[in-house]
Length: 324
Image (cartoon, rainbow, N blue to C red; front, side, top):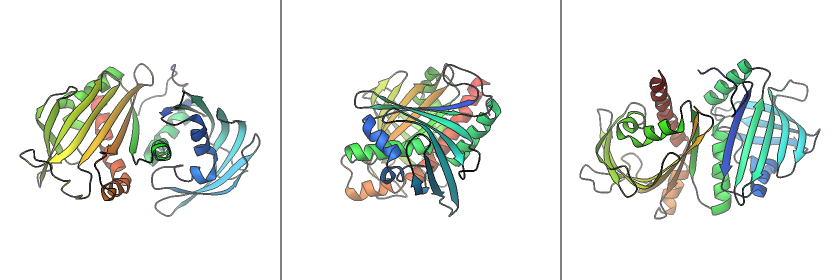
């Protein structure tokens, strides 16, 4: 665990989350404030929401219950302090009732970027120690998946396309993180699912280049190709991935026959300070995918989250070793 320190990005007693969404600010605001929208993305993956009462005005409140995938209910009470439509929300979060003490104050700023929207969240706690404890709790509970679910919801609203989005912030500079994604030796160390190893048999990391690799765990081996389509150091990497047989002929996922034949991956790296980088992964089936394949993809978000979380945990370990 890192120690919270003051920086241009966030104060020691703050948790700051910034996202840019490919959606107009009016839609992002509605996604936050309209009951029929917020219930479709609010909370970690697997959670659902029931709103009991909502009064969106300064001094108003929102009483709701989060329903966990394990059947446990989590009562929540939010008190609004500032409501500036399509621009700013300030509210207390983390209370279980009107009489309970909140955990922190949230300032949410919505900035119109001309068809896109920047969402800047600042969660202010009593101390640096409280911020660090809350940050660890949110990470363990999968709370940061909330903002990934919002991205997926907005994509569905704007383009009627199913995507998978996942973010993680790492304690390293953006140039180092870019190298960890584009150096085949590093990439193969952390990308495979937990319990598996990866080997590139050939690779040409450039726009128009491709790689052929295998993954295995001793009991079975699967093969695949990566075709690099766009590389902009140090912020962007795009590639298409497919499963093949040992002779590089197109095949299907060995355990998911309805998985789309081609998957498009976009990786964006964003500086959150001189030594912190946020990684955003966007996964999307190719346009050639059948409705059945798209449905299989959409239903597999929990598994994708688990897989990428395992990979990111290993990437965290690589980053820590690089810093040591």
